[in-house]
Length: 299
Image 1 (cartoon, rainbow, N blue to C red):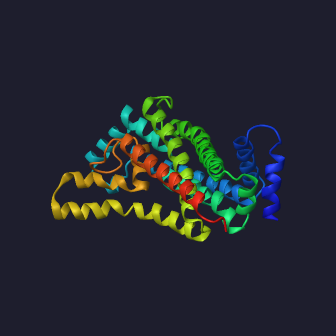
Image 2: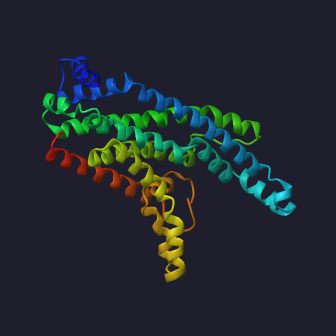
Image 3: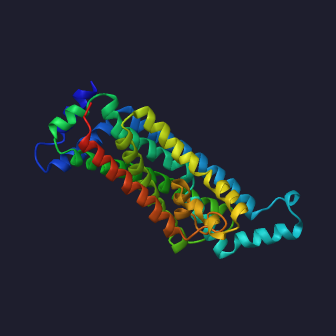
């Protein structure tokens, strides 16, 4: 059934136009006509709504600190800082990127499935016989994974763009969502979702095994958050302050540094550093995936 779907996707993509365009249309057809993509999108929407709710409660307590958790002076200072123009802009940027830390996992895992499903269902041979240029096939999947990541970003941004002004109005504070701090975070969030989708595609192309790739993707992502305590312990041993900025070499930490308005953690480098590191990992995996796909047997 899946083999028929793969060949039908290429046929129904259209007989005219360039092969890369037909391949891309075929990839979109496979994603659209199987339940996996829709399940991922549904789960992502539910998670984003939950993340917005949790973020809203957290922001509320920044604006209205509980007296039992801080002295009166501390509570007033915290509220004043949160209500300052910079504080409100940071809060809005955080709301507009709600759920990014876990949300990009949906793009990452879908990227893995886009390529590994071919090998898991033993339809890669059909695809590569139809289009012998394997690099072209992988690049079509790269573009499909990037578009899926962009779609997740678009959905989360639309939901956040509705919820954020309503939340700020309910808290009697306001800021422009077109301000640079907010816009920067939203645009870099797009880069994050796209990069993680392609990251998953590249990882799947390298490993080929669907189960192994999924576990590896989750392991790489979740394991990245252990970088900060690890380097903190190294700093305690060697007392070099540059070590405190080193967690950014972990992919998930690089993603968070890139998107966060302000330092993601103490001594965090500028956001562009995280963007360069995440992009570098992604391009390296795609290049390795293409090279290995050219050399290995299809089955």
